[in-house]
Each structure stands twice: as C-alpha cells, then as structure tokens.
Image (cartoon, rainbow, N blue to C red; front, side, top):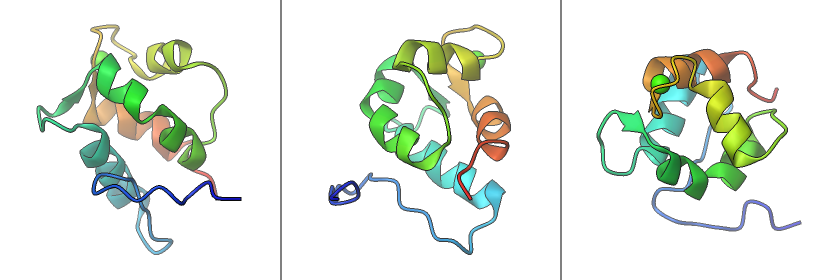
Length: 91
Ligand SMILES: [Ca+2]
C-alpha cells in the first residue's frame, strides 16, 4: 500500500499526539490553500482523497461537502470543519 506516499508541501500529515483541535487546524490549513479562512468546493475537491484517508466518512465529494457545510453558504468555515472532524477522526 502506498496510500501515504504522496509528499506535497501541503499534504496533510497528522501526528498521533496532536489534540483534535490541533489536527483540525492542520487539516484546515492544508486545504485552505489561499489562506482565505474558508474552504471552497474546488479546494475541498483537491483534498478529498486525502481527507477521506484521515476522516471516517463515506460518500462522494459533493455530498460530503454538503454534509460539512451546515449553513449552506457554499464554503466551509473552520468551525464547520472542526465540528465535523472532531466526531469523525479515525482513531
Ligand atoms: Ca459554510
């Protein structure tokens, strides 16, 4: 298995010792490439495979995006992502 063989500078890597809060911040920072403090669908799409490898979630990119975007404004805030991730991080 070479699931984690991709090494980009923005590739999400998480250390076991990180708290959920820290891990959420790391994931958010990696996906929010332009630093706008919100994640749009294009940014999310680019990281979906990586995201799925970290977070325990099924479904396609559009349905997962909609699931996280609880206020339906078309972008993911750090709070939305954190709320979603904190309950689903793989142990
Ligand atoms: Ca939103």
